[in-house]
Image (tube, rainbow, N blue to C red; front, side, top):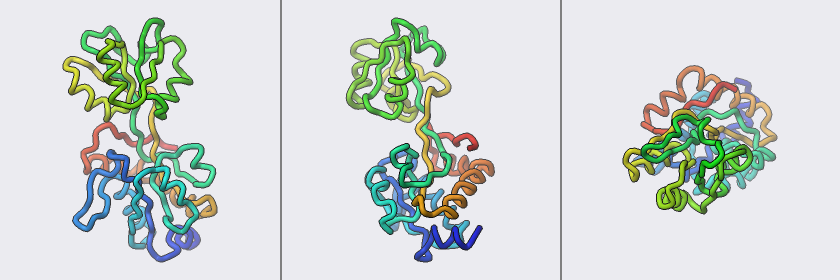
Amino acid sequence: MSQKALAELAPTGVLRAGVNLSNFLLVTGRSATGDPEGVSPDMAAAIAAALGVPIKYVPFKTPGELGDQVGMNVWDIGLIGAEPQRAEKIAFTAAYVEIEATYMVPPGSGIKVLADVDKKGVRLAVSARSAYGLWLENNIKNATLIQVSGLDAAFNKFKDEKLDVLAGLRPGLLKDIEKMPGARILDGKFSAVQQAVGTAKANKAGAEFLAAFVEEAKKSGLVARLIERHKVKGLSVAPPA
């Protein structure tokens, strides 16, 4: 590790890690001292340990609020989804984890695999304006996409109108399937929401250090161990960059 990377990432002698509390897969609880616990706080702690400095968590209610504080001397690294708009001001690593987006089908459905979904006559429900909903808008060619405002409303429309398929993030579908005995979640994913580590664009040496750290964390099994430790369903280690 270069001294330049250390100076950029921990200018106060402490690594201030911005954490998005709204992602229930990555932040799964609070410690006795009130610090966030989960895969993303543990990832931040591992980065601090590699730099040889203490960790300080800076919690945010939403990823948007976290992203807005870049360059404001509030956080040194931020753990959020690598969205193109945010990447204008934040240098992101490749993803360290992915949240899979896939499909659920009702009991007795003839749809067995992902490729069966985009066919003429198939009615597909999705929560409007979700990241995976936008992906479907751009990629579904033959099926009829029915956009509904909100996750619960999308499930209800799927159930009440006996639609053919419901799209969603795997963790959400794992909850929905409990309300529909005999339904199935298809294997694989059509897309994934990717979670990364970012720092201010100005921190060139720091960004290089973080990028290398994330690749090593995926390769060494560290990320897989964190997912296992916190028993998170629907989260998977992102592929190598």
